[in-house]
Length: 404
Image 1 (cartoon, rainbow, N blue to C red):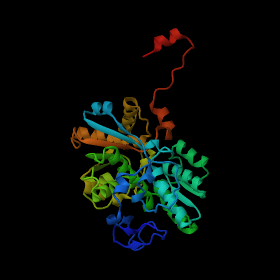
Image 2 (image 1 turned 180 degrees about the vertical axis):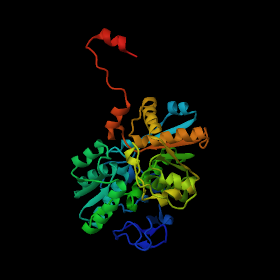
Image 3 (image 1 turned 60 degrees about the vertical axis):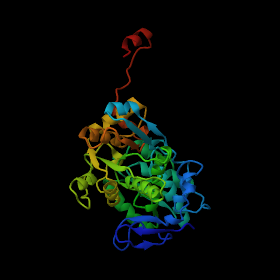
């Protein structure tokens, strides 16, 4: 068994890898997976063969003998976006499209590790609260592992494409009368009472998979990190995980820097942005978060404490964008670069544009934006914001006159 410890980031309490635990039983703090980096074989990272999350097994909490529950997640493309960069007046922009994971979102990276850990622990079932993508991903990996799967969704607040995925892959879906924060509160108690394994991002093993985004970004750039990495922030697990990934590469002297971690929230759900701008150590949750970007419609991010550290220690910033700015960015990314993403994903592009205009982001910075989910996760929104099909007679001359 690979040696690692589960440690509270607040009080330093440590727990066994055999414990089913999500937050510190002593102080309630978030947990992190800690390795002895002096025993990590750097060559097995830099020279690793294969692709995807499990290529970086040397920095995952499993031995070589562990058989992962995998659907070939990870290895998503990193696109150079010159037309979009020119439109913004910047010189070096790349987009890593996590929507091209098998289930259509970055959640697959965390679920392959989380569900593999569930098998190791011998649990009887898995569960989550979700704004959509987590439920879709968990349902797929649970099906692969043969686990019963239970997902709690806020009623009327989840895009149908995501609900459909969870249902198709056999999850028992509950539609709760409340928001995501209510669903997370309920599912945590449910998991305790029914001995289910919770696979929201409060689970530290989830974040171990998600940190591989950092490894892929660095590797595809010749082990050179960008100046800034920008991504949407909902429950704040991804920005925390990616920061940890870059930090590990620097600790191991594979890279020599950490990008400025830059988190973007929706104007109607921005507790982390507010805490940073007000210089507070903790967030004040938003009771009624609201935005068209359902994946980041979260008022009380469970990983806020880790996210605040990631942004502050990396010299990054956090900013909010309006729903109109998100929609404009979603359309621009699709029509200038051919990259189709769901609304929450476009928040990273909208945030970049705003920060450039504010003078916060220098125009010559090397920038990577993370887009987290595929366009078809939320087809209803596409229909709302795009021009409808034009009904026309089957006549070439009529069509020719109507061509733009």
